Image 1: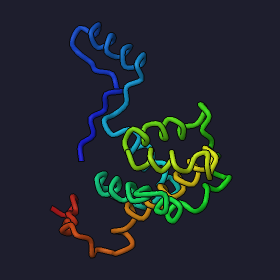
Image 2: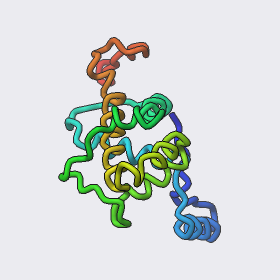
Image 3: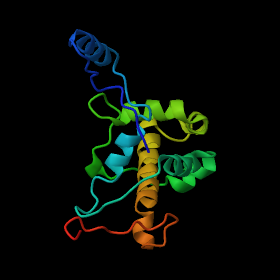
Length: 167
């Protein structure tokens, strides 16, 4: 999976054009092509065991995430609990959650529709998003660690181990 990052500086010979591009990226806050997914996946797996190695398929994760908000009932079923207090959830500017929420609303028409139906009629904004991110985190962890839990019975072919010292 190749992700094009536009937020990093572009260096060119002579330096002045690269500097201008760097300033423009900082000014406009450009993000990578798949924002906020990389950041959310990283957050979802940050407490994984230190010896964990995992691969993830963005389209599979997005498909699973989309199922959280097929409709109001799906949301209520898959996002029953808010994030634990230890996560420090907040939609304030000093946290990433508000920015992620805005990007996810752009990404998912069904999320927009479910939010419209639930907020504020049944849930407060903060509660809606805390529950959504808890469900999303759980879903991402299930997808990322699925192959690890299933052992080597994944759908991809096993890659043989090559010992670089044993040539």
